Length: 283
Image (cartoon, rainbow, N blue to C red; front, side, top):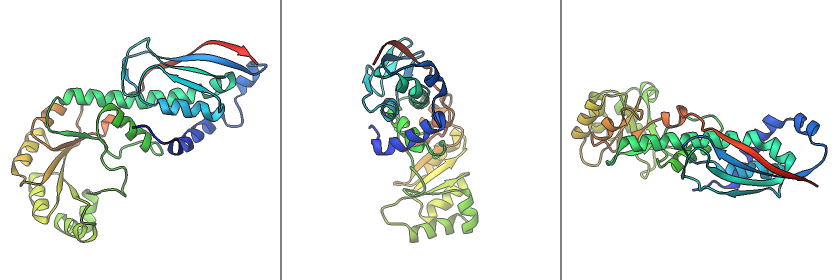
C-alpha cells in the first residue's frame, strides 16, 4: 500500500524547499554545533494514521542517516497520547524538517480518518465508496493514497485512466447520445463508458446510447433507488454529489453499486500531532 520513494521524494523536496528556502535561520542561530537528537511524534486526538512514509522521506532528505522507528502501523487507529513514531538523527535535520513532516502526517491522517467516518456511516451493503478528482494540485497521489489507507477505493487517478462524460462534454458533443456513441467509437473496448446524468430521463437516454456506468449527480436518494430499479442487468449506477457521513447510508441502502464523495478529501480536517524532543547529544 505504501508509495515508492521515487514518487514521494520530488514532493518532499519541493515542500522542504518552500519552507527552508536558503536556510533555516532560527536553527542556525540557536544551535552552536551539530548533535544527535531523540524525539517522538505523539497523536493529540483519535485518528486513522496515514503518512509515515512521508515523515521518513522528509527527514532522510535532510540527514541520510536519520532513523524513524514506527511505533504504530499505517492505517491503524491511534488515540490521544499515543506515540506513533520515534526519531533519531541530526538535531538540525529534526528542527528543519519538523513542520514539513508533521504537515504531511496531519493532512493524510485527516483524510484517512474522514474516510473511516464515511465507511462507518455507510454500514454493510454492496456500495463501493470512491473518491473523486477534487484534490489539492500536486498532491493527488498522496491524497488518494490516504483514501486507500482509510479503507475506500480510488476513482480515476486522472483524465488518462478512465472515461467519464460530464455535463460540459455533453453540451459540446451535442447531447448525451452523440457523446456516448462517439466515446464508444474512440475508446478501447476494455475501457467502460461512464456518463454523468442529472435526471432519470437522461439516464434512460444514456442507457439506450450504450453507456456502461451511470453517474447520478445530485439526485435525491429516492430517485437513486428508482435509477437502480430501472437499470438493466450489467449497468452499474453510481451516486454522487453532496454525499456526507450524515446521509451516505440513505444512498447506500438504495442498492446503488458505487458512491463517490469528494468530501472525503476536500472536507477533511487535519489531525493534531506534535513532535517532542526527548534529548540530544552534541557531536
